[in-house]
Image (cartoon, rainbow, N blue to C red; front, side):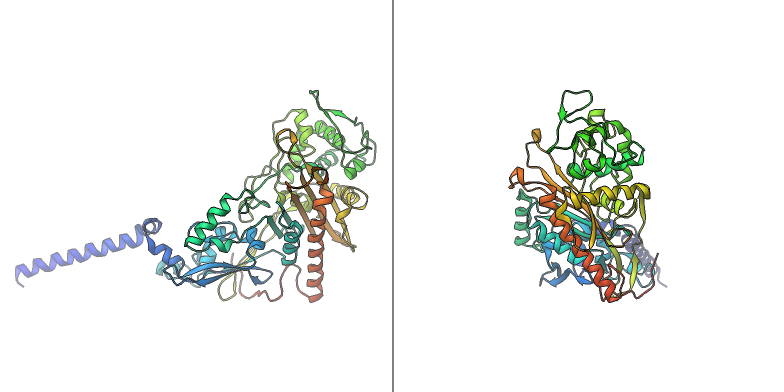
Length: 509
């Protein structure tokens, strides 16, 4: 062979080898860097090249995809967008994704390896995988009852199945239509600007991302600490509780809204919501109040449902006067509506606090289950005996106390009202709270637990009360859940599973 030809062939072989090495480097080592580069338009085009998987409520799809006619071929659509926005969040071509659209993005987009029929197939081939469907725990009837009950007023509702931790309703009001943010055009930009400028913050998920002073609903926690710790042995015995009550180490005297609180028993003080009795209990409990609150889930920084939940707080460093105020849900004590629903759920389920969750299971595009959420215990909040004594207190609130507006025919309901002061000098319109549980007559444990908060800035201050404003909303939600469970039993399917939900396929770990 001619020497020049031989040298040329070797040189070409070296060039080919270098080309292959560089191609391998790009494909294997630098691929993620190129994919993450904001200038790489192909990533966005690939992301929206196929329809996204859907989020389902009660077996029905509340999301969808539609063709855009542009390079980003599909954009998100929402059925009953404002109703389910606190569950779905939004999926936007411009602004990313939130809530389930965000936490379950890999499953919905098809990028999650769990959806692969052959392990690692997607990573090896880079082939597009159809997105999976996320089936939620939400009860549609409960969600609608909560949304209708708030009627556009600022506030939130969270409802749980105490026995499992399934989230049955999650409503934040006022709400918004996430479909307005889905596209990449001028309309989506205008909607983003308008929603962010709205003083009512419609995109804030008040049910899990906003904390409020819990007011007198926190007296459930205080009563639990007093009963569990032995400070109160007989809830019907009179206490040594002056009215007014001077906070320890201060000149400030705490009073009550109504009469009958001087030296009242814990039973009566809980029923008519006496601040003085529970403030004194808090001062006597000291750090025991904080320990009890943490067993109910307060100060937990890692709670996810799977969207992250704002931390509900009780200060661990307090003087006696501050503990007294915390015992009635004031000072620095704050809670999300989900947290207060967890308190009611633990009482209704014999003291056991289940971990709340929003995703029931995930299925692939063929309907086969690829992952499922198993219920788990978060804490044993109180003993079964203490839970029984707390139920007596909460049920008295509904039968003959401040929460009679929550009574549901055919069910035993326990509840606690709350009117939380806030703002400079407590001059702001109080937040109206109500937490509750309901069980059918004859049932040993509760079927539903609910927390409602209403922050109605337009209401007359004297008209705001948990019993008058929030309790009817809780009643409607509890009635809806009880009716749904009764219908499921009569249809012969497990409560909480919608008709038509497939259980095909093997569960994967």
